[in-house]
Image (cartoon, rainbow, N blue to C red; front, top):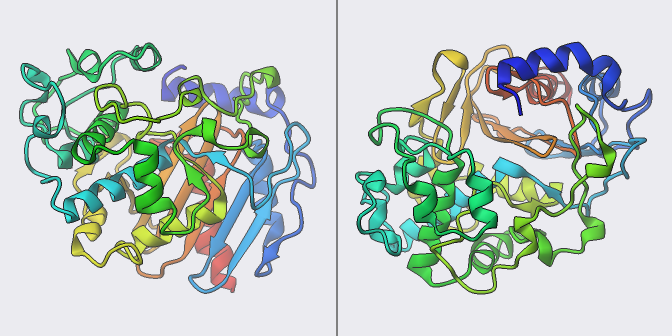
Length: 383
């Protein structure tokens, strides 16, 4: 894919006439609380050429659930699974901190202590779990990371040469870093990642979710497709890596699921987001979970309103809210998802889709920006 700046130029130039339309009346009837500004929501969906959208907003007491009626993909419903891409990182951070709470991991110890065959890897020197969860490990994503994963190469091959800075000195978004967290968790527990996520998070929270796409009924998974250039025949439900189940722990090679492979329905994602917002309740009562919200790094000049906690994006932008906004967004294979709450009020906005404009303002997706502004500045204020 082109760089973000070039991508933004391409999207703004070509989107109006080259991308599939969301239609003039893209929304199905609302479930739950009445939406007062349905036209405003419809305009955002049309503006960003969203396909197969699923929207949930909540004031902390009531919620509204809206599904899109697209012409080019099937309509989602409450039972539809979405591959939520990097929103997975919230669940990964939560699970790793549950293991910290259990005493299995020290977040500030060298990560090599919790990885198999880690001797003699200088790129890992000084790297801790806290560094991995805050994207300050000094490890960059190798350009062939996906090929290494699909070939079953051990994490050592991906880490070798990935070091570009001393740990704790520079913020750089790293899927490899979050992948290593998965290796750590399998190594210290001896439990396959899919089972670990299910038993510690998904089942206790009553979620319909999995990090193993191949274990789900494929006809309930919403396909995802890039809208520019638009090739509907390339719509994807389960990725090549997701075709292989995680039946046995393999902490040498299971570094491809914990950065972006979670599948979930929108109500289940609301339960996960609420758990993190509420500092781990009802899974655990521990101040150790609230550390996710503490700012550990800044995006810098490119996105001065964006910071990062542990597996959490933090937005401070008065155009969107007078409170910090926390959560995560997810971009992969054409989707542009977002799951956020407003700290201080507990209000929530979640949007999942099968395809959407991937244009951004800095690093924040324009669709997420517009949905946050509509939710927190207009719609939820009218309830």
